[in-house]
Length: 460
Ligand code: PMP
Image (cartoon, rainbow, N blue to C red; front, top):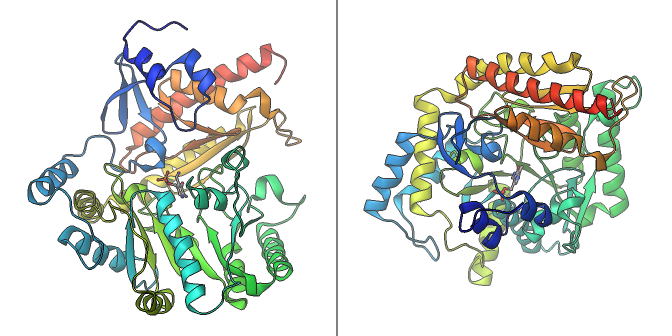
């Protein structure tokens, strides 16, 4: 495509290197430029309106125009626009936010470390796990178990923990000490007729085998999202986390909950850990912590982890880790205001009340000829398409059916993300009943267009 000289599209193609983008395709297609937002909607630079079915990147919980968050940022800019928290320095927004996070944590937690992104929060947690074991003299207990299709970010360590080949290929990842257990995907991976409970038992047994084969003295931590988000909204089978946690306890392996997507009401409770009865030693959160208005993330550790880390920091002179923007005061003030809004405006309760409406609409797609499974919990879900749903035959990955459906749905007015052939939904928590209906109506039009197209091509 040729772009108008000096237009935003031409300048984008000329200068911007986009994350998660095929650069050759981008030079051909150019960008979709988003201009402004309002409630659950965003508008492109031609004025076309889209309902944000993914809350941006699973993150803008309060929608795209929240005045209280704007005011909180402005106020903090006036008081103190920047200060750091290195070497005993502190500031009130950071202190208040840490106290608030400890008070709402799903299990007793001791301390909060601030970072800027989910990836960094996981990186911090990985480093704390290693530091902790070094402090205890367990210098070989360093392996970290993630899961196939788990997503924990893209810094070199968090990308290594991530269990998706697209985040490894070409980047020399995973680095040493990261291994991946099976994903708990009942629809795709359970045996014929295997119940969720039996499947969960098998997964826990396989995890134990893996730990024993690796050597329990070499395994430091197990990482899990309550619901795998970027891996395709994989809701764990019943009893899974209960069985997994028993194995971890047996071998003294730390349990880390990555609540970057599931935290703050997404699964119907404040934390995904509450929905799935997880009792993590370390909890990582980001995204909806500030409704993504400003970048901030947090790594919470319990007392068991803190104690040895504290002593080691004294022996070594200091805990040699921290970001220039750890606990940035404006980001912290906006995050604190976000959490206040969740409380004062009952956002999490309202999202829980809206979940049955969302799940019913989502599951109404099960009858569609292309849909193999419609799954989800709370206000997140996915619709997985299949070439032949009766025999669970998937489309060839190279056919790009998922991305094609996402593109058609976007043309029909809903922003969506394809994870392979699963179309993910994760709207702002403030979405109303009529907006949920509108979102799925747009999606249905896109899906039907995809079906027509695939039928014409003899693929469906
Ligand atoms: N963990 C999970 C569960 C995530 O979904 C993501 C981002 N989608 C991350 C970590 C990484 O967060 P960020 O993109 O802010 O680095």
